[in-house]
Length: 125
Image 1 (cartoon, rainbow, N blue to C red):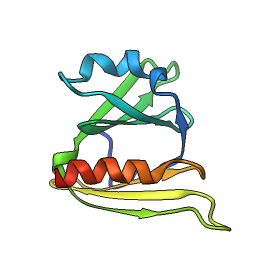
Image 2 (cartoon, one colour):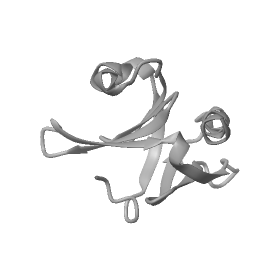
Image 3 (cartoon, rainbow, N blue to C red):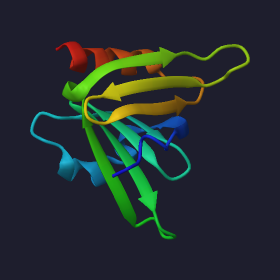
Image 4 (cartoon, helix red, strand yellow):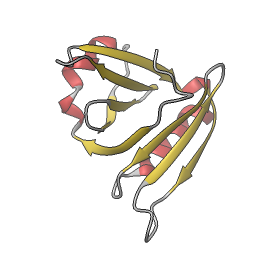
């Protein structure tokens, strides 16, 4: 499992959902769909209709991957910081029961409002 206490996923950029669809589709349950995908240099974060999936790509070849599934129903709260004039990135902090805080940083232009809506729906729904 990814150590979220020491890890910070920096500078995630939006990528098309179909880029990782083949990799993650065997993990999705009936009725679950892949909605938003973000990637750093090698690692990636996927937002589905039911959960957040964080993938840590390991090794020289990148064939070894660690998948961490974080269901929205386990979220307790989240915080969003939008981009400013000098600080060009957006940040989302999410607190999960029995796990703690997950910190994600997105490049400017990422649609964090849609991500917040999705998380709110999972948290309140």
